[in-house]
Length: 71
Image (cartoon, rainbow, N blue to C red):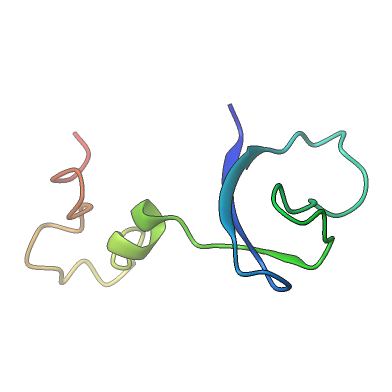
């Protein structure tokens, strides 16, 4: 399922919501209803900065530190 983390720019609330490709318009804050929200980078993406690198020089073999790499 397409779960994404968002932060409201108006009240600062962080929340997780389902977002479908067919959904039109901005994601609304669950707390205040504002449409001024921003999608947050997931912790998986933040921990895998070397994943997909073409250099292949990563000491962990180019895998993801969060999962120990892909097999």
